[in-house]
Length: 224
Ligand SMILES: [Zn+2]
View 1 (cartoon, rainbow, N blue to C red):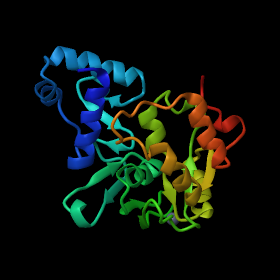
View 2: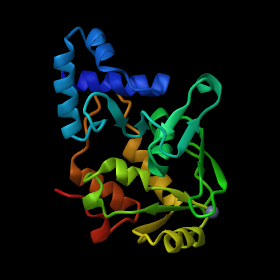
View 3: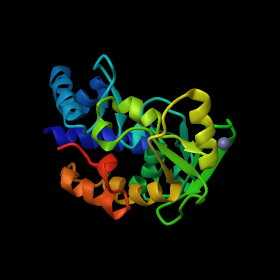
């Protein structure tokens, strides 16, 4: 067993069952003891390959999947109709479609007006162009508190509703993006997460993906 075998099992369980595997389950499946699994999960957490809970005893996120509700519900038809995934944010919700290579329905609420929003999206089906995504923090700070970052990458009906929300809550706007821009970015960013032999991309490659989506300048500069 190496760390990447464990990571692969975590992602496969999320994809197939919509949940995170437990430490005990990973230990039995990998044929090792739980202490070995805990150490492995901590290394994967430090490598940003997944995110552990605050107390380090369970998996909280494996981007684009989340083990707990974060404002986005992702469902699909056909062979996937029994499944439901929690999307970690707008980006992650598009990412679940990209990673699984299936059409999905993403449900959330606009924080500006609380209207339920439903997006039917897929690898070849973009969201409606007037929908607006808020990116709260510059790329250099995304992993300072990744749960906080993801929790605030929300979908709004329009830029006007984002502005109204920012006024009402007295919170600064990081960047407002067309949902289609983030959908475009999610395809290469998340498309390979379930591939056998997946390894994290070097930062320079991720920076290229941002640039290819038109996201350039200091706000989008990833940390070294
Ligand atoms: Zn709204």
